[in-house]
Length: 220
Image 1 (cartoon, one colour):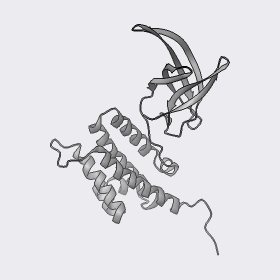
Image 2: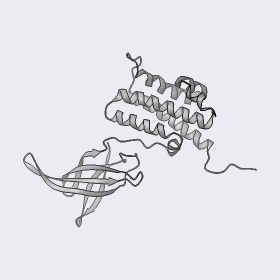
Image 3: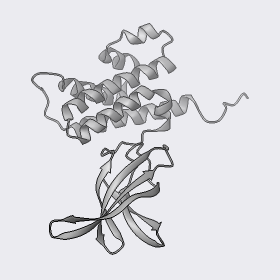
Image 4: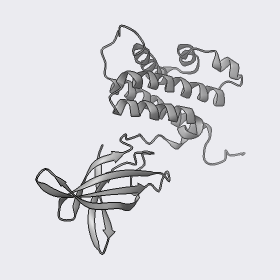
């Protein structure tokens, strides 16, 4: 997790706390309202250390995250513990509107990945892909929900996509499926699967923007 310094004014003086660069709750660039919850001296080994616990209220998602910080020098502190401990990606607003369940599964998979549970993350990203594809198809291509629901992921990719978007989705499908097999067929890193999924997410964002432009179409 990357950190930045935030200047805090408390009890008549300024000091600096480390905060996550991006909100652990929503992934937005972090500029929270910080409140000091406690400040006390704690004896560790042969010395006393000044420890601060703080809450950080994100202006983007209206949720708080928390840190425990230890004085490093003078008025500066280093974050030793962050809750939540994961760092979600900030997905496009177009994707949030189109497929809230994709966003949830993607976030859960990313949390698993950051905790080292790569097997769960791999299958989760594959499931997230299927949700996104079917939500997209139902909104912009198919009118029959049952028709969309009965398609396998492989069939849905083949039916609704071609070219580069097809290739990106196929990589995620194949590598995601590999996590469910007893013997894996491919030698790859989870980061490679996720990179192709992010490419596909970018394509879907572009399609949503083009199909639902922010200005009205010309009538003349």
